[in-house]
Image (cartoon, rainbow, N blue to C red; front, side, top):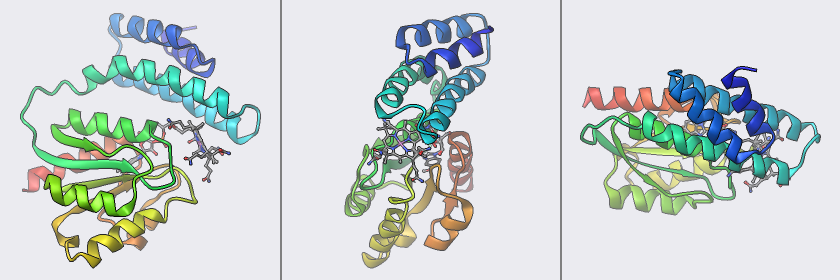
Length: 211
Ligand code: B1M
């Protein structure tokens, strides 16, 4: 088994110390940190499929998520080491009713790496709070994550609140998460859809180059 397979296996097994050990080893061996990240996500993706097929249940998923986060803690400083002044400000959060935060945290990590100053609102964030924080922090981008088909409509609610308060034009709204796609983003009036964290960072960087 190579280092990447070991990382993926350890995530699937929820073996936090082993995940950290294999991630560190893969980095020390000189592997690209993005490949290490892919190995971590591969493990979680397999967990997702098993969860869907009822082969495993919430406790196993949580243990795998904890092991994944241990690995992410190691790659995070490398991915975010930009050493440059913030190029702009954004807020990020997961919509109300939704507790998934692994993808959101990855997007945040990549945005920090792209040179943005990020305020993380966490999970289960009501629409009003997204808008209040965006205004108060004077950000340019509002980043919204949703992982459930039952919560993705909350994204539209945030855009409605922005419109009702007459501030829609002041912000760029970017949405993402497993059930979201470009068509949905367009339908609810979001400005951008990003399929993954790297694309989110690319969009944010492009926006600031245009300023
Ligand atoms: Co949940 N869960 N979960 N879960 N969970 C899913 C999402 C599900 C698809 C599993 C399945 O059935 N296959 C399913 C949703 C089905 C649906 O809505 N159609 C599901 C369900 C049903 C549930 C519960 C309802 C289960 C239950 O209780 N019966 C429950 C809901 C709780 C709640 O939120 N209210 C629940 C609970 C949980 C746990 C707590 C156990 C745990 C979350 C732990 C945590 O986040 N701290 C969990 C997990 C881990 C998952 C899976 C297995 C993995 C999600 C994940 O972290 N993926 C997931 C199955 C799956 O997705 N394969 C599943 C890794 C992460 C890196 O990917 O978040 O997609 P993702 O992020 C990606 C992109 O989507 C994108 O970038 C990231 C990668 O670069 N992205 C953005 C995300 N946000 C973005 C924002 C952007 C741009 C890109 O711009 C702003």
